[in-house]
Image 1 (tube, rainbow over the protein chains, first blue to last red):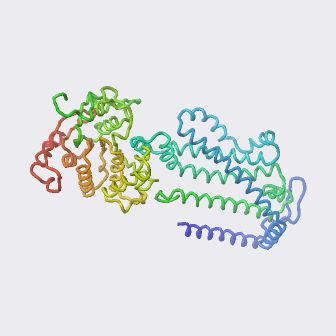
Image 2 (image 1 turned 180 degrees about the horizontal axis):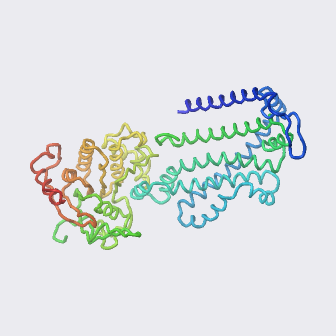
Image 3 (image 1 turned 60 degrees about the vertical axis):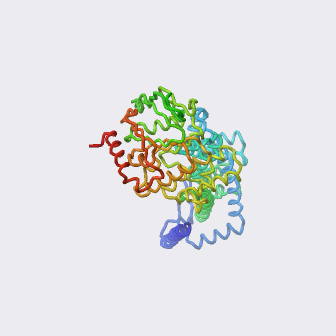
Length: 267
Length: 257
């Protein structure tokens, strides 16, 4: 199932890389290398770095340990936030979905958080939880929780009536119906929301790290490369974040496929 | 209802049901019905006459707006395994294997795994799906899934089966095979059955008795006793006795000559 998709995906990525290399070679010497930064001109800017300067920059970032260290720190934050947020969001979503009373209680709060962008919460979290790890992880967790809450809530609400009726008719208690009917039937929806939340967690971490900038972190690496500006560093930073999002998504997909073997086909 | 020797196991007394809403729809009006123990009663009526509504009332999912429903003498208060209910829509649990589906009712009753296995083994044999015990429902045909649903209900040994057009979605051949399978099941495991259908031939082939409902709002229009010998077969379908009752039923449903 996965192999033709993986193959097609790899071909697409490779094609993109080749196109980029061609564009960079064509642009070499033709693109301006002097840009206005608002207050002064910066010389020797590579708008489209060639693969050679990308390789050199990559080698430097790898050898110095900057890239690996940054990736590790950011991944740890994302993973922690994703875990905490998913647990909280799914539990709340299941509760609000399964209990009619809890829903009316939770609805306005969920809506409020849902349409509040992560950045809006950031200053508040910094004041509440300080400049350290807590505010970054909790910011991710909040965003993840809102998405997974919706996924779980709608998953539970969308469980076809027939299954619940059939189970009730077979004498299943409310708890058994929840465990053996609602949970498996809501699972695909919950899992989709986790995938979306994982992507969003990476968006959030980059933003969070740009504001409270500290090495090592991918967010700060990007911020620094923007300040100089050093386009090769930027591109490598962006590619690293993109690659990590891809890895997270693939992991989620693998888990999803394993857990939904009963379905005709995994999406 | 007082003259008969055996008391009805299932009865509806002057039942009316109106679906609430902006335009309330009356589905049943003053319907009285009784099903005796071990009787196979076929409830026949046109689409939209309230057959499903009546079955959902018997199953305990709806409360009659007027009148009362009783099972073994006591009022029906909610769903329960004593009245095994097979819904019209596919309701086999897709995330459970065939065996898990069959054992669900026993799981709900807190029966130990070993004892559940004994029952599911027997049921798998009964419906001829032993080879599919570990399969997920996506691998089954519609007809097979329906038989699993019927067998799943039998696992807890209910006193009554409520079957809502179980073979409505099948082609004629599969349907006939499923009818034979159900008849065979019923002859081995005598149960009181209330079988809803809109197909007169199906009602005749399976039922001991047929109750014909009128179009909405549904009420009892006619009764027929089907005293054809069992087990019934393809021969039965073309016998003079069968065709004679079929003609009467068609006339009663208002579609005859």
